[in-house]
Length: 355
Image (cartoon, rainbow, N blue to C red; front, side, top):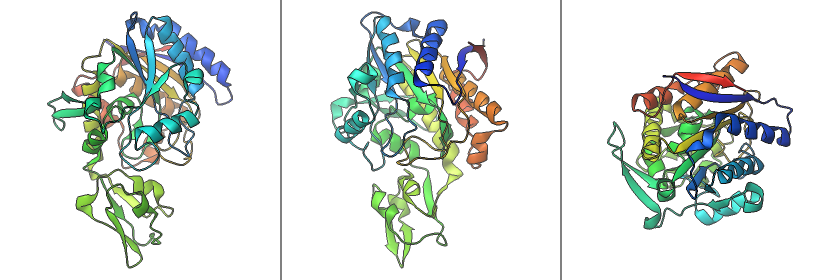
């Protein structure tokens, strides 16, 4: 049986109020939140954006979603977990301040903002998965303890996974820093010495001190490298490249982590994808990065695999080609979807309901 994916088109020129009206219609006609019950604690998993990046979903869009949760009797709160790499999302205090600066305050977004500190043991939970790569997933407990989950994802390109959507938002986004490391640890960068100018920016952002400048060039201590790709974002000359041989493994680990988050919530979770401001790279990059596609629209589904596949298909249709493969030729983003279907996370077969 095909999974239903509801879709409403959005054009580049549409105003915030117009988009909010479309979100309201999408939620009403899809009945996406019918699983929410009175007094249920509903975690709305969203990305608050890295400093210097404006690709994240507008908090005023989040407010419409939180108000719809409240109308169903649920008690929503917005949440994201801390990052593996250096930056203002590395710890909960700085992350929360940055979220506030980006407009994610209760008055604007319609709900409290909770960013768990995974340095505290009580905020971490280990969930058995027992799959090919991940045996036990390390997750922020808040996502497991909540009664229901709503994943609100900005659909965009990604250097390690081809694209990022619902599966990445849940699988990578709900993991603790140690859990994120487990998903990244087989990926390491290489230095193209002919491009390296020895500026040291890569060494400054490396979270493990794995990079040193030797004879005017960057040198990576491979055993120390955790594959977080922060050096790539910092390098002004593109001297840092990822060894993509293990990229497929990262995608599969991410799907296993998503399964760990959702295994007790497959009937208590809903997914919204915003295929707007479709950038080449993740919102984690601390800089603006180019848009690679026109605005396409908003998607809603109870199936994380189906919603990502529909988003992928319609974005590529709007571009007239596989834009994610064109911008990241070393990656096959469908790998994460095929594997997610294989492990029971959802279905690649979907029925698109256009509103």
